[in-house]
Structure formats: C-alpha cells, structure tokens
Amino acid sequence: MKVMGSGSPAHLTLRLREREVSGLDRALELREAMAGGSSDATLELSPTQVRAEIAAARERLAGAAKLEQARVEITGPTWLLAPVISSAAGAAAERLATTMLRFTRDGRDVDDAEELRAAIGDASAWSETLIACRHAQSGPPSGARTSAD
Image 1: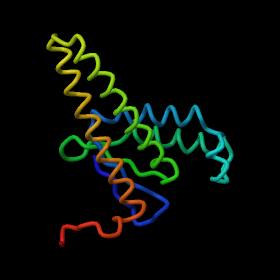
Image 2: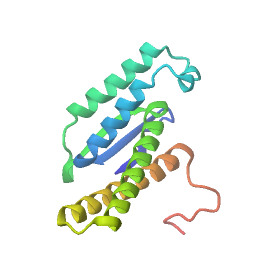
Image 3: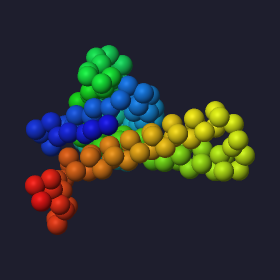
C-alpha cells in the first residue's frame, strides 16, 4: 500500500493491493457506524454529511478500477482516510496477534500456516500504510534521513 498527499492537505490518495480492499472497506463500515460521535463534532459536519462522505468513499472503493500490478486507488478527505487507515492497521495487528497465539498453541495444520502468512502480510502492509499516512500528513520528522542523504 501507499499513501500519497494529493497536493492538498485536505485530501489523501491511497493506493492498495486488491486483496487489501476488504480491510479498508471494513474500517470505513466501522467508521460509518460511529458517525456522529465526538470526533465528528470537530469536523463541523452533521452526522448525515459524515455518513454521506463515507458512503461516497465506499462507492469509490467498490468501483475503483484496477491499476498496474492489481492496485486500486482511492482519494478522499484526510479527516476520513487518516483515522480509517489507523483503524485498519490496528485491526490487522490484532488479527496477527490472535493468529500467532493460535498458531503457537496448536498450529500444526498447513491452513494455519497460510493464515499466519496472510496475517503477517496484512499487518506489514497496513503498518507501512500508516507510516506513509503520517508522513503525508506531516512530512518527515526532524532529523529523519531522506533518500538524498
């Protein structure tokens, strides 16, 4: 996955692997269920407006065309995508922890190994996406090395 600034701090562009679309959709669905909460009060948007933006993002995600290397790209408001990315990264980390515990206790089955590999891949991808999101929002931390270093 990759998160890019769109040229405006108000929007982010998220490019993800096709298999990771469901994780983003689940996070958007969870965000939709929480619309109207205290975090929305700072947006100066009504719960109806928040839900409409989330629904639009889910529609864009469902209708996104596949790009090269089976990637899907979606652009949306930073206020929506940044917390959704954090949520998806947390869910992927929880899935990895749960799968790892189950695998270390009683995992002798090939399916368990494949499930663990998938959980590792998803947690890694979402972690990289979260890092890229933070970078796109604020730029590199002071003292950080760049590719020009």
